[in-house]
Amino acid sequence: MASKREMLEEILSDLADSLGADMLGSLVATPDGQVVVSTMLKGGLSAEKLAAMAAAVVGTSERLSKVVEAGDFEDALIRCSKQNILSKKAGKRAILVCVIKSDANIGLLNIEVEDAIDRITSVLGV
Image 1 (cartoon, rainbow, N blue to C red):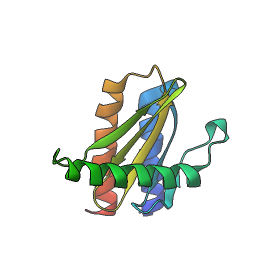
Image 2 (image 1 turned 30 degrees about the vertical axis):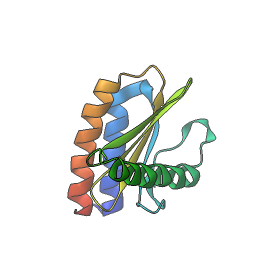
Image 3 (image 1 turned 135 degrees about the vertical axis):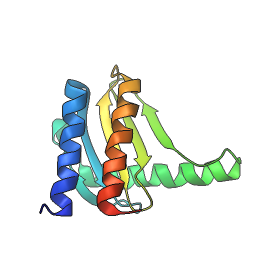
């Protein structure tokens, strides 16, 4: 049987395959910003820095959604001129972070990310 790490790496690989050249990298991190697994190979982006910053974005966004009584936080999509960064909770134990091209299909990204999150939560539990 595959280890949790191997299963998570396969999930990220499948996500990259489904999004093709639009996907620049992805990682699974803990809510406190520790890297669990990463495919951040392109562009020399540090997985550790990205995980820490994404965890801060998710934590801040969760607090903001509570303060303004907007409902439960779902995701944070940061749109930039060259790349977009999507950070989304994967249960209570993980965050999925995807770096994609700025002109990537966000609809397809959302569908594929939801599938990946279902698989991540299955591996890690709630």
